[in-house]
Amino acid sequence: MSASPSSPARVPCPCGRRDRRELPLVYAQCCGRYVDDFENTPAPDAESLMRSRYTAFVREQAGYLLATWHASTRPATLDFESGVKWLGLDVRSRSVLDADHAEVEFVARQRSSAGVATRLHERSRFVREEAGLHNRWYYVDGDLN
Image (cartoon, rainbow, N blue to C red; front, side, top):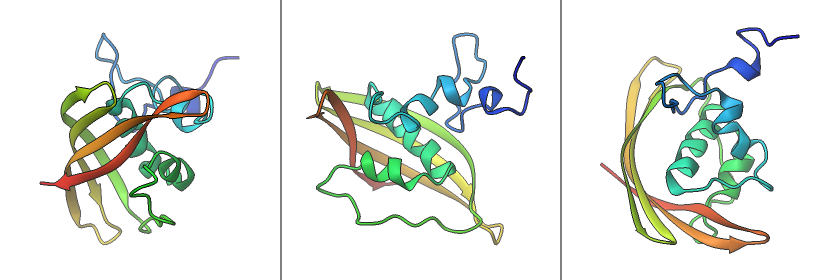
């Protein structure tokens, strides 16, 4: 039995990542493997973590967002604004500072339930630390532009 075009196996990943042929990657082949199996499949680099965190915001998956937020800056809880529609992600740059530190600059677009469009332009900082059986990347903080 094949998957229908609207099945989760065929849904393009919200992060917008594309393959070598410039076709959108589906959720399961992209951020889904990190978001849905965080314990066993950590994001391999800061950009992949940033993209998967954007996807988790789109899908309102607070557990993943909190688990990938560095303990030094992580909030106790995370609430989502009702009615927000995420419109897209544009990764502007990525910088590997050393083996355990990186930055990713991105613009995320959203529309509120009142129809107001906004852009979040941030240079985010990430750190990689040993965590159990894996080295994991964590979001630390960011500077808004």
